[in-house]
Image (cartoon, rainbow, N blue to C red; front, top):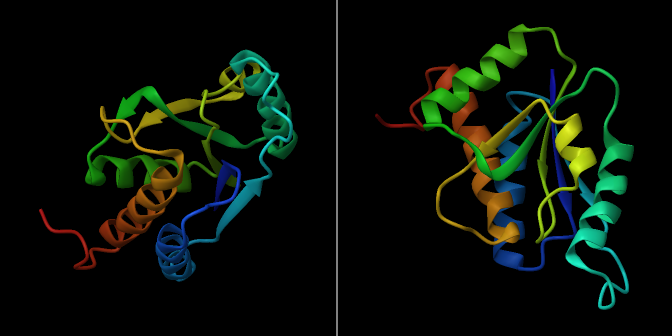
Length: 157
């Protein structure tokens, strides 16, 4: 199985980008992992938030492939402990799917069409994080899940 993390727009802050690169590099020892960046929309000043969500949604839908398991990172999603998240990933790994696609949307969330394609929604916390920070937090959690599944000493209970 491959894990794909799809994000809208590049990571602006170098310290976040450095952290993402560290965990992405570590992850490659455990599972095929790819970070796909969909470019920010241009000329959005005159667009409503709904129009922006729909335009971003069309770009996201182009990335999805038949058979993908799509999990949206969404504030209304299910919360997991790190151990339960590793269980979630393990179940997907043994289910025979080819790609597990996690999606971090833009600042206004996801379009209805993207929600309709999703198989699950995951919330990292009840707190709100910037979309930039969520990338680093999430990649670290995927790495943590892999170390939990291998009984390695990174995670402490």
